[in-house]
Image (cartoon, rainbow, N blue to C red; front, side):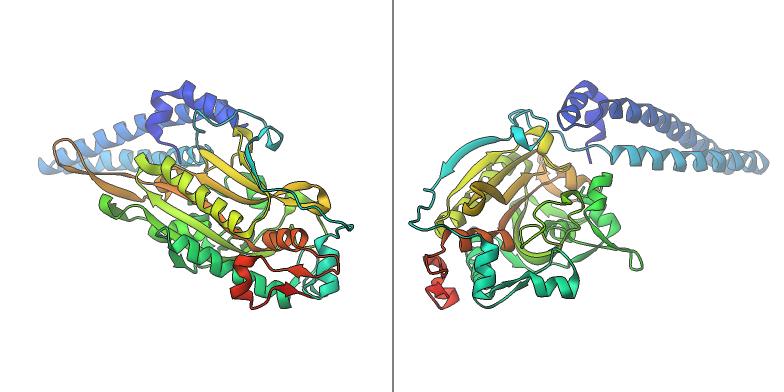
Length: 415
């Protein structure tokens, strides 16, 4: 949620910001109109309440009763206007930082750096689907019979790789002060809305909603980690508050019809390790770089070739003010594929969740302000399995286990 005062005091700045995210600037005018109506109704209602109180104190009962009916009518109108105002306010995305590249879509993201040499073979490399099937470690055919399309059984060596990746990610993040957490995978509608992931119809189409229970299945771990501190006020000295969560995630992939229908790249169910930070606003850009640094540390530990992208305005999600992606080389496709992302959501989610921190002002008085929230992928398991299987494949069809994972897997090779 945006700061209402920002929209009131800097409407042109907000128009420019949301336009860069492909939102209609007219949203600002729509909000200001209903906001003005809401303010007038609030002032009128408060004025009549004050009059009613005064009349009651003066024991002018009949006049007070007459005012009561008028107040009730105004209150009903005010509730309707307030709800409409809230609905419009919730349509706003976060405003991108000034240094975010302006672009319409992912084709205009900017490559910041490329790390690692691409693999070279003296044989024709296979794709992960063929390798996984031959080794008996990825089975999408049986999963299709059991659950339908876009599911897979992860078995044997691939399952051991998953557990190894989880261990590596957890240990790496914990050294940076992240507390491990296994969050719920079902959350209330109001919490999903507060995180800003179902504001648009296309966002809703990607989620699974359990209508009888009024609960959403999470599409990414941060959706249930963020609300963990809903309504809380932190002491400034206790920030940043960092978590690294493991959860199974669920997505409809409704917008991916016909794309990557085979294999485990785009599936309805996958496991993920996610970092999340609640921090002082002054430090959020620094915290963002820290999370990106951890992601790169993990990639370098696996010795996989990757590049880092700075995401343009048109490809930013609704809650994000800035975002980086890491894409890892997929040999069979001869291109990089997204494996990680990290976003700075500033106070956008914190306003909806009402999460604040206490800070001292110049007069040494305490005041509360909204914290900033950030998230970042440690590992999206399925995509990392694809990257490891393809980049570490051998001529005989076996898979070398990355050296950093061998102690966890208990083997040097999957064959």
